[in-house]
Image (cartoon, rainbow, N blue to C red):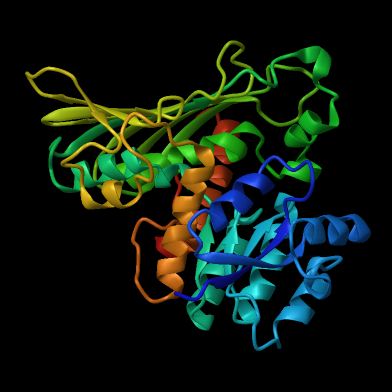
Length: 377
């Protein structure tokens, strides 16, 4: 099978997310790293791209140069990954979609709900794929959990409890570190800090596993370090369209917690628990029965979990391979085989609507508000 051609914008040398995308895109031999604009410093970006194997004439200085260079080539890229600062996502994503190039955008997809709705419309109009990197939903045991819910193995879902809480920004003496400070600066991060950064992963996961959408929410935000304009801790209660109740906590000042992303789903006849720090295991408890550990790679898993389990049972699979699973689904989608587990622009705009609604709710002392983007009401 001929490899698809892939390009990347952002994610340059020293980037936190760049290596995960490069490992993920090339893990299965589905994509060839063909073009890149990796750095806001043009020469450094060109040089680094060439070190990674990109041809000199396709190692670009910025995304505009890359778009101009790629859109008329016969061998142009099939997919571009946008891993730039949040405020640039909308402009870049829209431009590449309109040029007929599929996009995988880092989250948050846009800074505003209106921008998100525009991306949904552009993707529909052009027929291009716009995916959003909610990669935690691509872990095999998360796919197993979703399949079990869909198969009725825990009955109707009553309650979802999830959190994404760590303590890596809990040191007040480090609050002015540029790598930390921007996350709580509205000029760079937008209207929300921790909820927009980590909380939306937990909220997306709640919708993904329960196979339902958030309808209303109530939020309480706190900036526990005085110098921060945006929240570093948030509690969000939500109700879903199918009647499920949701509880979400997200924090960056929970000192002692490392990654801290987990989710529990409670149904009428059973419960499930998954934690990102033990991603190979899904904990299942049937009502009145014993708690069971379902292992990645074992027999009898649902098809989607089997398909995305890459190595033998008892061998760990990590974050870059979850990203690789997103690229597997993207490759299938580009070739015409739809994967309904692939997070798309619709998920991206729902997340952005939830962020803006949570901000508004927190300002109104936790008032319950409609969290749906207008396009889906």
